[in-house]
Amino acid sequence: MDKKIKKVEVKEEMVEVSKVDMNAVLQKLEDNKKDIAMLLDAADKGRIAKYNAMHGGDKPLIRKVKVSRWGKNGEIITSWKMLINESYVDVKGIHEKQIVEIKLESGELKQVDLVDFYRTVSKETSGEIIGSKNEGGKEYAIIELEDGKKIELELRVLN
Image (cartoon, rainbow, N blue to C red; front, side):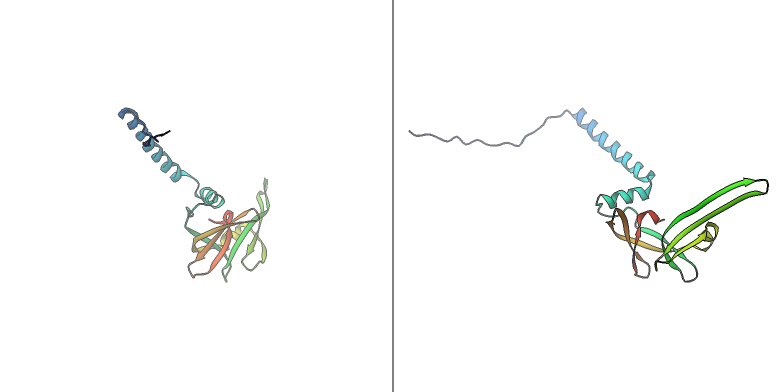
């Protein structure tokens, strides 16, 4: 018994779409592109950078950052938090007690008045974010300063 094998040609699947429908889809894509550009321009850049750091974005949205320095010798401030934030008004006037704790690059902790903090801090040093890492549930940016020094700062303290 002689059986012949029939050769079947496989054709690429095609979809037919009317020109009107195709133009509508292309217009919708163009509108979406404009909407995305508008949202990225209006968005909080810090939150976008945090999202990219957490989800393995290929490059940070924010490349240049300012680093805060403290005092005459200009030590880098690695973090700060408000310890006391009390304010009230009485017949004698406005009374405020605002104390901030800062952590310097050396690991030293200082408690300073908030007004003194803003008077003493310097933001003249800038750097470029060259990478990021996630450690212990915190996101860190790896920053290369103008002098070539590399430091790691939490994303939440970058300005």
